[in-house]
Image (cartoon, rainbow, N blue to C red; front, side, top):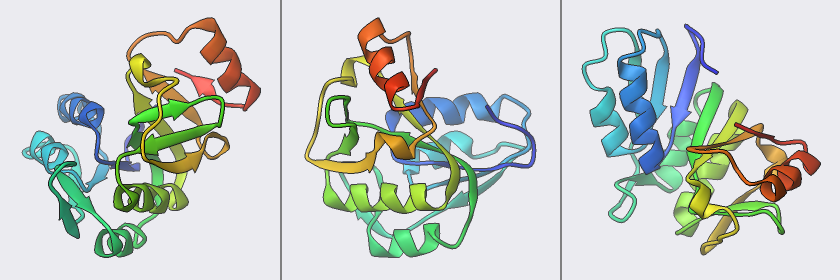
Length: 165
């Protein structure tokens, strides 16, 4: 999904920590923007990519920065692709959710400034929901999971025009 020269956003997500580790050894020349401390640490020392860290109000539970200050910095850039974490994916309502309103607002800002957006999640989060919805699934390009989704979930995503990767 990624190509040299792209600007991508890796938001607060344990899955994005793993993506960052893969990117560091990929040899791709990217600009990686993040608001998560662990993603920043995983990317540190990458000789091929440029790393931009977004500050703001620190969210202890998320290990990252969210809120108005972070959103203002996020909005300064245009991202070719954004990879967002998900606490719950409610296919019936067609929404992705997270724990806090501040994280939800920051994720919304990322989506608004990204050409393509992908939700990253473990299959166990499909059918779950959390406190705050942050996007309608029609606003994302694909859902990426660690293993193939069941036929019913894939059909629900397909009906909304969303790829399951």
